[in-house]
Amino acid sequence: MTTAAETKLDITLGVPFQNSAAYLPDLLKGLQIQSHLPAQILFVDDGSSDESLDMVGTFAARHRGWNIRIDRNQSSIGIGAVYNQIAIASRQTWVQILDADDYLLKGYYREIAPYLSGSYAGIVTAARSNLVLLDLLNVAAGPLVPKNLPRRLPVLGGLATRSGVVYRTAELQGEPFIDPAFDGSDILHLSKLRAGGCFAYVRKARVYYRVHPSAVTSRLESVSPYRRQLQHHPNAGLLYRLDYVLRKKAFAWLRKLDF
Image 1 (cartoon, rainbow, N blue to C red):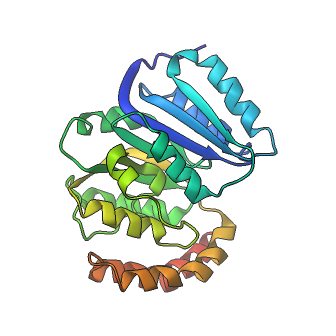
Image 2 (cartoon, rainbow, N blue to C red; image 1 turned 180 degrees about the vertical axis):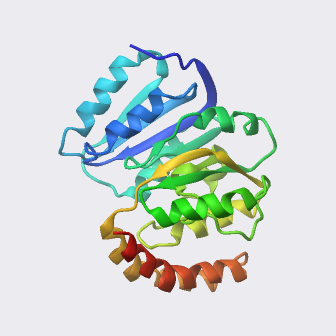
């Protein structure tokens, strides 16, 4: 079984998962509704003990023309290591890493297709979320962000999520993901990559980003490493420091109101 999606783009889509059976149906459905697809789809099971692996295997069997590959780590190596595992395994010019609890909205790859042949160092796409505040922020501020993303504007966590970043594979292999255990690590990592060239911001390509209630507490406890790294980061200007203040104070309080 397959769908009408036939246009293949020079992208590896990597999907790391571990005991993600509750979320994978939305992710898999999000792929089926696309009119364009990545040339390679790589699922990496990081030691699941639920039915996640079976779900992905069934999906791959139903879409044999999609160039789907499934790798499995017998025991967990950690999400950061899996991110880098996907980057190393990519055989395409571009690579995207979609967390298993996120999913793509309709028309995602159609919207980014024109940017893949340009000189952009990477592509950042917009977010929608179960967190009402993030949706409101995207509606209000998203249209104001220019297509050529300003280098000193931190967009992850507000206007976008890591799942919605499309990286040049060679650049990502040369700049591995840093420890994702603390809030802000994704922003610092992307700012390092953005220092090497212009990134595009594609507002009409959207990823649905789930924020979990447990994340509120963990982010409050893990934001301090973000501050320490900002002190040594050459491109961390005023907006990055403001982002830290918002995460430490305002965002934490507002997130509690959302749940």
